[in-house]
Image 1: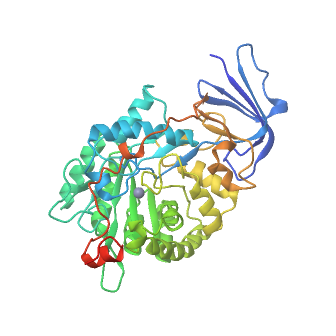
Image 2: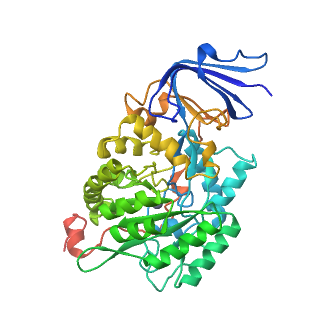
Length: 449
Ligand SMILES: [Zn+2]
C-alpha cells in the first residue's frame, strides 16, 4: 500500500512541549512509520501521496473527553430524556459525530449516554460504515437520588430510555455496571453529586466512599475505565480515593482532593466551556439567565479557577472536555474553546494546553497508547493549520485555519451539511413563557378595561 508523506513547517508532536521545524511525517496503513527532520526522511516511493504543508503547523488531532452524543443540542432536561426515541438519537448522534470530527476532534469520550448509542456509533465507525472520530463509549449514567442526573421529580424516576440509570442499592449499581460491561462500554460514568446541598451550602456526595470504591473496583475488574461528574469536595475526594480515571468539573474541591487526585493518578477535565458559554452567550430572555443559573456558572468559574490553578501547580494531569451536546455547546462548534480557557483561566501555556487536549486526553481512549501524539507506531491522526496555536490558542476555534484533518492517515471531509435545529432537538411542548394576568396584559398594552 502507498504511503503518505507530509512535510511541514512546524510540528508539535505532543511527546513533549517543544515544537520542531522542518519535519516530515510518513504514514502507512494509517500508522506513522517516520516522524523526524525532513532532511533525513526516507525518499518517497512511486505511488506515494505527497502533501506539501511546508507553510503549515501540524499537531495531533484533538481529544474531547466530554461529549454527550445522546443529548442532541438539548435546551432542557426534557430534550435530553423525553422527546426523542433511541433510534432517532442514534441517527442524530451519528450525524453529529461527523460534525465533531470535522472540527478537528479525531477522538472523543462520550460519558453518559442513552441505551447503546455511543457503543453503536463507535462500532459503526470502526466497521467503516460511516466516517467519524474514534469513540470511547459509555451508557446510562449511574445515578442515585442525590445525583445530578436524577433531575426529574422522584415519582418519575428514570425509565429505561433515560440517560440515567437510577440505582437504589449497591447491588443494583454493580448489576448495572456488569450489564454495561457486557454490552461493550469502554467506560462507566458515575454522577458523584448533583444539586443536593446541606443547610451550610456544601454539596453532598451522592454515593458514600465505600459505595464509590465498590463501583470503581468492579468497573476496573471488568476492564472499563470510570469517569465521574463531581462538583463538590466530597464527591471529588471519594472518586479520587476510589481510583477513578477521569474526574469532571471539581470546581468546589479543596487541597485534600488535589492530593488524592495525585495519589490516584486521576485525570482532571474541568469542562469550563459549558459554564463559560452560559455566562458569555445567554440572552436576557434565556431561562439560564432569568433563573439565576448563569450567575451560578459565573461564581462557579471564579471559585473553581483558583483551586484548578493549584491542581495544575501540584501536577494533576488535565484533559480537555467541552460538554458538547447542549444548546449552549452545539456539536462541532466549541470543542477547542476549553484550550483557550485553560490558558486564560488556569494559566496554561499554549503548548501545555495542546498537550492536555491531545496526549493527556488520549489516555482516556481505548487503545489510548496509540493516540494523542505523533511518533513512530502511533495512529496518523493530525491537524494541518495555516497558523500556529502556540502563538494564539484561539486559531483552533477558527475553521478557516484548518487546511486538513487526518484520521488514520486519511484526509477527513471538512464540509458538513447543515441541519434544521427545530427538527433535531427542542421538541418541547412549551407554548408560553409569560403569565398573562390582566395586569400583565395591560402592561403589555394588549388590553384595557
Ligand atoms: Zn457532561
